[in-house]
Length: 126
Figure 1 (cartoon, rainbow, N blue to C red):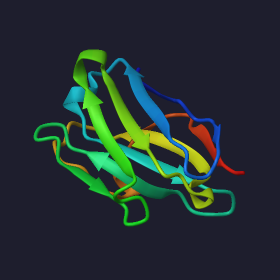
Figure 2: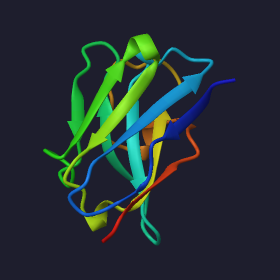
Figure 3: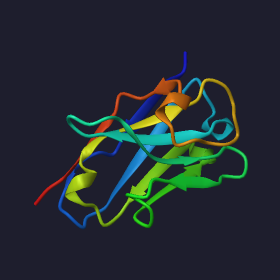
Figure 4: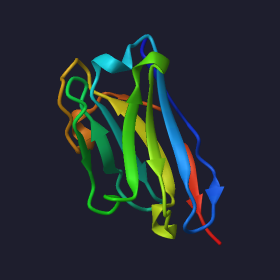
């Protein structure tokens, strides 16, 4: 069965950087659109970014645009979320998600995705 795993979360100071990674067993990520989401305590899970499978076009939430970058390394079967200039409000559990089938495009909506990782904690604090 398809299993999604995120990694790379850590405690960092404001202004710091992190790279999150998303891998999956039982799936070639290059065939999937991939979404990154986050959920802070007491808040709804929100979309952060997504990347298409074919043309590798990307989308970003306004709150992270210019600071976060989503990318693929198909040779490593990995999708990354590079985060710079981190802010305390970026603190959340970050999730990687795949849709049920193989749509080439991506949508910044949690309802569009089927397979989810367990999440990785990102904490931005002085």
